[in-house]
Image (cartoon, rainbow, N blue to C red; front, side, top):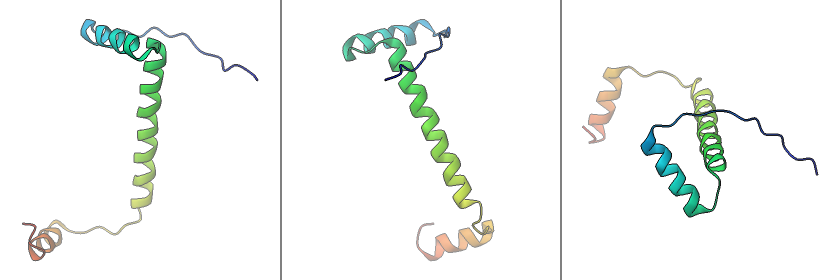
Length: 78
């Protein structure tokens, strides 16, 4: 099995975040690098989901503000 290559990067944290990350790493028995990598991976996955939702909704028809408000009032939401 081929090992995935890693790229070293310097990341700067404010002291409070750095301390919290160190504690989280110690409690979870994960490296700080693994925690940061996972957080970035999750953030990028959420971005992909947002873009996919935007793409799916791009073809939806638009509704005017007036129509939206009337519809909300009609259904007792305003």
